[in-house]
Image 1 (cartoon, helix red, strand yellow):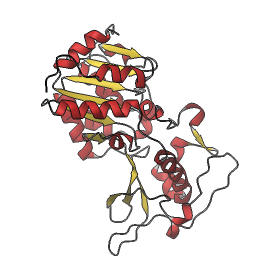
Image 2: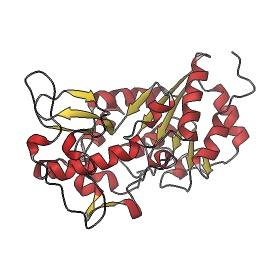
Image 3: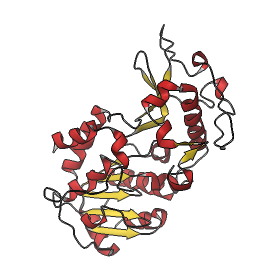
Amino acid sequence: MTMLLRNRAVVALGLRMCSSHVTKGPLADAVKHSSDMSEFREVFSKAKHIAIITGAGVSAESGVPTFRGKNEKWRKWLSQDLATPEAFSRDPSRVWEFYHYRRELVMNKKPSAVHLALAECEARLKKQGRSVVIITQCIDDLHRQAGSKHVLNVHGSLMETRCMSCGHVSVNKRSPICAPLKNKGDPGPDVPDAQIPVDKLPRCEERECNGLLRPNVVFFGETLDSHILTKVEKEIETCDLCLVVGASSIVYPAAMFGPRIASRGVPVAEFNIHTTPKSEYFMYHFQGPCGTTLPQALAQHESEVF
């Protein structure tokens, strides 16, 4: 399984929006899922190691655009065409404007009921000797803002930068991230590019480096961080309950995490406003706003003893 995940991760993330089909065989066969909350709550009450996979739908509950559908364009470019190493190499000013816009947008958002329920659940279960890990595709900082401690950012973080020269990664929550980007990044279709000189874009502050910084996110066409992936592999092989929350299940390799967990016979519960291409592989599906369904699912169970 480890090799399979690594092979998937090495495939260019330009394929993240590819076919949503999951080949049967080693995966769990399709099952008729249940929406029985009482039954799920009983399963939840017995779980010792819970893996929670979150997607853009969780951020959307806080008002963060999903960059799909009506939000898929920034100015006249598709978001996925800007989020590539080639685009950054070709026009780092334009790409930094795009990410500056996203950073500023996220900085003005607050954790939703989903984020808060997950953080509260993790803290509560820790006191009982149980664990919760969040494996997120979201690149905002809202899980940590809510208080979640055990978070694996599969696609990186908007609040981190990485130096193109020395490779140093650091947390960076400055607003604006550099003076020339102040008030830049407006997504309007007729807004001209700022065309900021490269030497005025965010630069590395490590001693004697001054290299160009980039957002520490996984661009389309790049591989996942191997250290994060190793941790994810461990979690999906050892969890005894999995929740897939607000995830479209079309973004690879994360789209396969839930079905792979289900293939071990582990209960998987999906929380989403609609069914997804992977719903058929999961034991439970709870349809509706995650901010409504998830807090109820994770609330303190009557059997919990402190």
